[in-house]
Image (cartoon, rainbow, N blue to C red; front, top):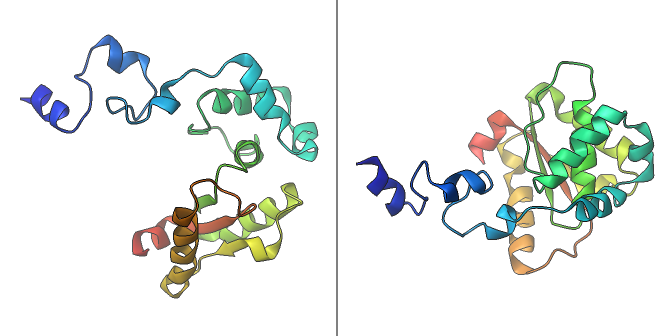
Length: 173
């Protein structure tokens, strides 16, 4: 039965108050920090951490979208029409969590360099040495090196680090 399988995987049974009141991805307490609601004060404090250049360029509806993402610990899907600023919103959310660890950007293959340029444009402290664009499976060692460095440190203190890759290359990594 489906309920028994869900319990074996550690997921709460469907249609319970526990299931509906926790964050997406909830699996019976393993992501308790993500399930905790974010207060308005915390959202404003996290939003204030975003680079001033980005904050000044956001339209009011984009500010609302970034704060919505922060309320959900940065875990959102930004699905909007073309030309309304999804990229800058995503970069703003990433900037709000810059001290949490390295950033992995997964984009269409044709957009890898566009995203690299946009990240350098909006994040002035991001130098080319701190960003890797994975073009082929030969670049796999970069991601493995970053993963080892991240696992070695319980807290992230390595400075801003960004890896940009495509959906297709992610499959090969």
